Image 1 (cartoon, helix red, strand yellow):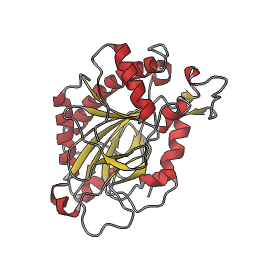
Image 2 (tube, helix red, strand yellow):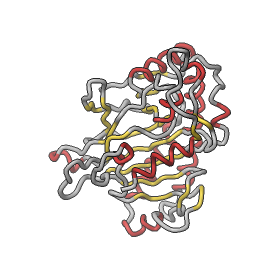
Image 3 (cartoon, one colour):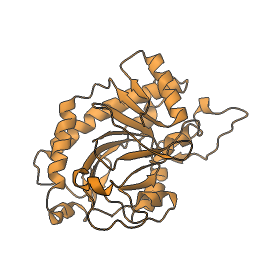
Length: 303
């Protein structure tokens, strides 16, 4: 499946129209012309690969303890079941991750590789800037002033997660996936992924699961539940998952994805956007703060 590919370096009005169409139709799109330096992406991918290759006991020192905001947290294999966020009981997902964000609680920076912190901070800054460009384009697409989202994103609570999907070992349990079917919890997700067997799949309108083919040098952007709620469901948060690779391709199926969850500040109130409601389409949801909403979804996903 080829997602809509949108060059965001073009005329803002035209780009916003294209983004609006993609968000109404599928809630997934691919962006090019983003200006994020490839060396920043490559460096982050490289240090993350090195981290995930460390012994399990070394990685697990970052999985427990006294959590403090602004430190990374390691999530071991099978410790999360994303399908559970939608009330579906499945075995733990076949992935591990290292999560970090200035407002996210964690347990410490790893000693190895020594340049991981600098790489993560550089990547965060680059994708944070891309998120700002997308916010203004989203606003235009919703017939709002370009700066409409800015108050909610002042001191935003965004985070990044680097996910390692190792080649599956042993028997796969019934219903087990690399990442169970889910919708993201927040506003928008910006991700860079590798092309390897057992990748991202999106459920289309007919209910079929379709493989997403990554475009070199691009980012995939998808909407989360919070944005669907904000737009009164005019825009979609689409079900997606990461498949288990076919048995004959297991040896070459290692995959890594760098995910950036771009979310408002914790106390931002998420209520129906004025341009998304009228007399025939009243607001569907009660106002809620961003933190309350994300926490309610995230707690269900712990395996």
